Structures are given as structure tokens and as C-alpha cells.
Image (tube, rainbow, N blue to C red; front, side, top):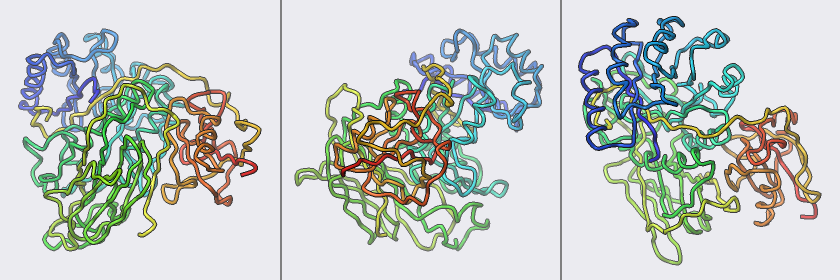
Length: 515
């Protein structure tokens, strides 16, 4: 999967420390290259320094302990109660690299110089009924500089009497967030994948086993391991700066089990906060080694997408009652197909479940070691019809390390058109649906306006747009009414830091004359 370390998030109960000891012992017994580090959860862990330091020291010399330049990694969920002096004591006595999430430090980070990295736990999801952008990341980077780490997660839903809400996770959030991280990889210390086994919040990626919090009714028979497999592609891209070659035809797909507006017949709790932010959609991320035909089916709803190009495509159809299935065909033969066993979309649920059922239809692996070319054209399409062995219920987060360095500042970048045949139309607002240009050309660490316009031209498109610093979009027309000031397209191009390539939901659009 490419993960470097697992954060062991734990509270005050003695059995949790026992499980942590078991995790370290298990890692050592199999000589696992995957390392571990402690992340006390101060919503339940006592703010008592001496026992905490003793816990950290207990595992500091363990061969499976994750270290940063020889320093013991220590993270946390919250921990403002320790104050700066407490964190300094941990750093001094343990020789620690400190990477906590502590809320409420906005505007005060300059006073918290003791922290090596502050990571944004909540930046994995949009805040409210909006699309996920990088605005919060840019805000924190402006305050933290090179001390910023962030997060990525595919989902969040929880349905207890003490917390009953969801975060908007539609529109291929997981893929979108990884592309955002690629655009920022030179500015991040670490990326934390949330999570391995937090079943209660529905963002688990490991197998479903072990104890779950009392009252968890939405996890069993809702597998997420396909998201774990999907992660490997993006983790490789993030760590190397290049998207890997796709060597296997795979359709990753996910869906909720009932309409968002449905009324549960036997649930003692109300609908989760945010229920009306989500759409009743079967989402699919299609990875193809060569062009093919993809069919998505949900009950009586079915759509066939012809000439889906090689690369990564985003497809979706509306959900209707019944089973779901996916199929890839090429040259008159079925190369990958799957019917979701154990999944059924129903109109009248007994209890509310806004969790996702996640699956993957796989084809035959094609050997290759060449990184994906920027010339690969992929489409994003919405339809027009429309525990690790840990058994703790606490989160276990996968963390990946950035190997990149700091970039030049945004203010040095310019909006120069790529060639004389292409002219800049300016900066435009983009949305998740409809996209300002419908064809997704590529996401690449080598992205420039020239690369994007050349790609779109080679496929016969007269409009091209760069976005997020790494993305290229193509099309044959544009709505000029969404134009905004050029200053809003302010992210430097990944392949040329002196040029700008759009921004978060801002597309820098070019038009090819004579087309």
C-alpha cells in the first residue's frame, strides 16, 4: 500500500495500552517495514505528563517505532491542556518529533514553536454543504509555513445519540483530495490517511473485525477494503511525484444503501445532520489499461459509457432499488465485472445508514514499470440521465511521508498564455457538476499550460483549462459568465513554478484559435 507508519490513537483505559503493546510485538515478530507511533487522544486521555512520557519511553527504543531523522514521532488528537511547556518537556525528555492535532491554535501558531508539525485532522473533508477545496490548507500554510501536515479520507458518517452527523463525501472526494495533495506535496511534511479501523465514523479501510463501539449498526457487511487498494495508486504518486502506470483494469465503486430522504421505520434517532447534503448516486473510479466500454447498473438504472479512455475516469449513475453491478468490456469481451454481493439499495430502511458499501471489479494484470504519461487522456463523467490487528475502537491512521522540498512562492507565478496558437480567456469558477470543461485530461506533477493545451489539441479539443496546479481539463465550449479575476487563479504549475495553473475550484482557461 505504501504506508510508512500507523498512528496508534488511544485513550485512558489500561486495555488500550495492552493492545498497543500487542501491536508493537506483532510488528516486530513479522519484521514489518511498517512502523508505529503513539497518538494519545486527549478527549479521554488524562493530561498527566509523567505517565504520558513513561508511555512514550516504553516504546521509544522499539525496532518498530517510527522516527523522523532519529527522533521519536509523537502525535495526538487534541492536547492543548499540556500547554507549550508540557509539549516541550516531552520533546526534551524523549527526543521527540512533535506532530499533534490541537484545535483552537489559529492565529497563535507563532507562539507554538515547539511543534515540529501541526496537522489538520479536519481538512480531509469539506466543512458543510460545499465542495472540498484547498482554502483551509492554504490558510494553515500561510501561518505554519513548512510545519504543516494534513489529511485525506474517503468518508465520514456516525450515528450515535451523542454524535449524529456526516461530512459531505460525494463527488469522488477521495480522488479529489489526493489530487489536491499532489498539488501541495512540496509544502507538506506528512499526510495522514484517516483511518484504518475507526468503524464508528465509517472511514475505516481495514477489514471489519474486532470490537466496535456499542450501538454501531452501520458497519457490518459494509466492506471498505477496496478503498485501501485504491489508496496505493495515490500514495505512490504522492511519494514519487509521478502517477504510476495502470497495469490492471479495475472499477472501484461505492454507494449508500437507501435514499437520503428516506424515513427509517425502527430507528430511535433522527437522521444525521447533513443528510440533505448528499446525492443518491453510484460512484465509480475506473482505472483502464486501454480504452473500453463501462456499464454501471443499479436496480433498474443502467448506463453504458462507450470509449472510456485509458487512465483514471470518474463515472456515476443514479441509485434505484435493487442490486448494483459494474462491467468493463473491450473488443467484444468482458475484461472485468462484479455484482455487489450482500448489497441491496432499499427505499424504506429500518435504521439510518449513510455508510458506503465499497467494492472493486478487477481484470488481468498487465506488466509495466513505466510511469503514466501526461498524454494519457481520462474522462470524468456524470450521467446526463439522470485493526491492523488492533481491536480497539479508536482510530488507527495511516501516515505517509513527503520527500519533496519547499517551492517558490505563488506571487512569482504568471498567467502567460502557453503558445501563440492558444490565447488565455482568464480565470473561471469550476464546480463538481457540471464541470466547466467535461473531459479530465490528466493530473501530473509535470503540469504546465503548454502540456495541457498540447494534450487537449491532440484529442481535437479547442478549450483547455489547468486547475489545482496539477490538473488539465479539455472541452469544446465554455460558459463565459463564470469568469472571475485572474488573481483567483494563483497556484503555481507543478511543472513550472513561474506560471499559474488555476487554483482550488478555479480553472485557468485557454482557447485555440482557428479551431
